[in-house]
Image (cartoon, rainbow, N blue to C red; front, side, top):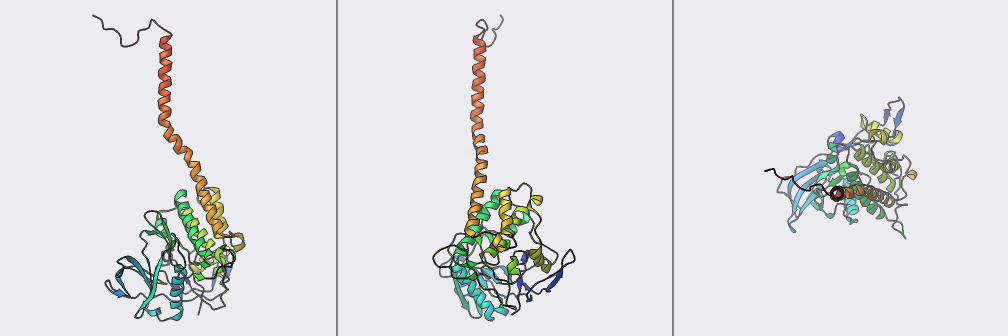
Length: 379
């Protein structure tokens, strides 16, 4: 099966598998060639009507559609709860590879129990429809949040810490997401972050004797195997079709953090193939030029995640999450004295007034003949 990648919906219309040329010319005139074929086709949308039953779920409305399937709001008729139902496009529901990917997503996500990862309830079939039922996360995608531009540092770090915690839990369970993008992150009105769409995830057995994720890997696909992901967020090794591990997700997180910090994408070119080549060969615009007020420690974390070589990234995603959390704490402590001074200001004003009164009384006491109080009225 030819290799393929999924274009980000905000850049290419609906998210889909698309065909690309293998060779592109870089801006400096050099040529960029990928070492695997890239081809594919757009997904057809299934017509599921409101009120229709899929298993024991009654469809209410469509939430979105893309290359991995369509997502609907539905009601669980047994438990009465609102859920999200993800189904494969009708044209592809009978393809073994697509069904396998849907089942892989369900197995990957259901193996995880973490507040920052979407909960999977069930995988099933209803006639010709293959579906996954998950919790319905209300809120906005991070892609929608970023429409207004770069995020304040404290907001950025709140989201970053939760994302890194979710990824760390997945990596400790032997799961590599492989498609982390702003479109696959939900932010609830309460500020809770949920990592979605494990449709491209790889489920591996963690190494025995520890929960670290340093050695979680899977085999490099053979030439002609399917290579999937989102242009601009895939790591260089994933773009080449090579072996990837948890550090590939770190690269994608770095691209997301860069976007949150600067309001622009780390790798964005006129065409998708040029974007892939930029991931392989170019460095993003230096953060200090785009956002000079960003704390240097945060800039260094982002730059380390975006290292071209996996060995230059973090030894574990748990270490990355810890650095982000520590940075958030340090910045909060730096802001705290300002708040304390704000609280003490009224007390300082009262003390100043008392001192002024005391000085006045001392001055008057040194002139005993001076009348204190209003002048006497003349008759």
